[in-house]
Image 1 (cartoon, rainbow, N blue to C red):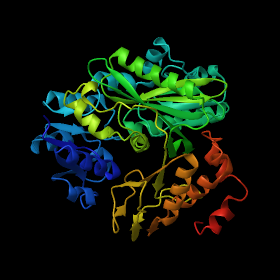
Image 2: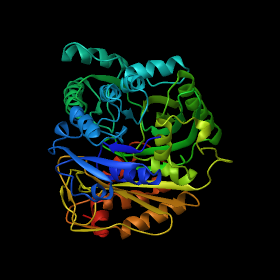
Image 3: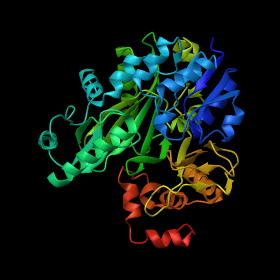
Image 4: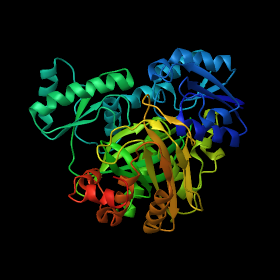
Length: 461
């Protein structure tokens, strides 16, 4: 039995995991940077260790410092959360070498799923439909461009490892392709320590639909339905919901079952999210498997009543699926929607670091707020500018939207700019209300002639 777990992450991630460990009666050790040591979850944890200065490469991406701190704290396991080292196979190997448990899949699955081309090929062999894409692009810049454009424009250049929309850049012609390759490689190197990229054929107005799968180390698997994460800005999710609206129920069920069957059959051994792009014309096209808990896992928890963080802890402790209370008597009937609150303006969507002079999250039945901050906390320029996630549940989709809109209107934040105005307008946007969603819908709203005046009208300009 695990008795003490170190958390190698920050913000809402670390706060969520401190709470999960407390629920499991496991001691928590927060490993934090010098910039984060005064945040509220650090005080709520049983212990904390400062692992380095603010830059991520010196703290949350510093494998040696994290491993040393976990050993010094006499932790038995390390939970990487999501982001940072959560998909780093070298980190998982280092922990294993020191006798520590990595709370996630086996290192080999981090290696396979972290290589987007390799995982795509594996899933295609298993019968999953996949989008058109190249292998890793190698050679000179012009040679890479030549290989990529054989797919035909438009293209999306993507890092071979990593996630979160970092380094994903569209190209519509040869000049923009060269710029996209250079920019994607640079962002991938900074964000993930590896500049390898590949090209994928860009599907017009797809939906981003992902399936929550849970596997154990005995080839048992199940799914907890799907999430729609199509509302994105700069390829970063900002609104997510469960379940996915306006897609045939049988098609969703078939794809969810296939996702669980395939991951179980190949021997995957933890939680994972199988991501797809969907359009009525092409159906579901496999994108990747994220071998970790997703930011948006809360909407799945909200409609199923299952705690995915606790499931992770149990699986890491050797539990079988049959030991976990994951069975649902019938498909969920409620709807949950999550909004990501960022410290960024609602016009240019650029980071807006500062101090939360006023920070009063909404409260009430059916409202859940995940955050790592409190009034007086600083949102620094060192890390992702997400402040909080607000999850609302309703008896149906329109009820969930209404509750989330009211919650966002009641969210009081002063001291820096936020995307609250954008989110409120998005929730009121007629195509969104009607479920006519796709990955370009947020851009359509922002580029609409009335967007700026609408922001001003709600006092968010």
